[in-house]
Image 1 (cartoon, rainbow, N blue to C red):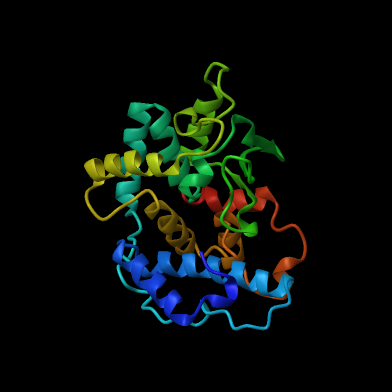
Image 2: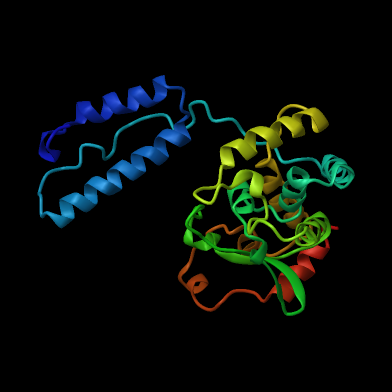
Length: 253
């Protein structure tokens, strides 16, 4: 460990090279550098230090090792949903929930049973941060109405005898949500059923394409997926009511 003032640009470039040597892709390195820069900037501000952050403006190729994620084709989505209905178990409920909502895997895996709520008479999933699973951004907090396989999955979860507070107890120990374990198991199952090139995250890409195909307004798409909508006006108000969102999502069934 060094004093903050003793770090220089060569330390930052060595750290960059170390991360790439470990096999991380450009996007992962960018995220890590963003965190390190932010921590150092906070320390510089808090302690009134006038030194230049050596981790700022470090060059690296953001595209290194980044694979383009393909959206799942509509026919394959239908096939996956049919197989989920046949298996009718916890893993398949999670896949079915993601397939017709586009929520992130960690968002789904960390849900409580109580996160399934009725709003305006519509069954919804209420996505909120909790002590065992944070959310990616503030815009990730949202209420998504459930249709199709997602509604079926929620109903199956709620129909189970009371026991665990978690919707998916296999991936929660009360301390944290093990999204990595969920990802490995679900991706392996998807590979067996619809082939190479897809991951559970592919359903998130599919959701955006499916909504675009229905000419759904982009700000509604962003609200459904928890994507950040730019512009001052988008920070005003509470967003679209779930009845309006459901109207668009029903077109996907």
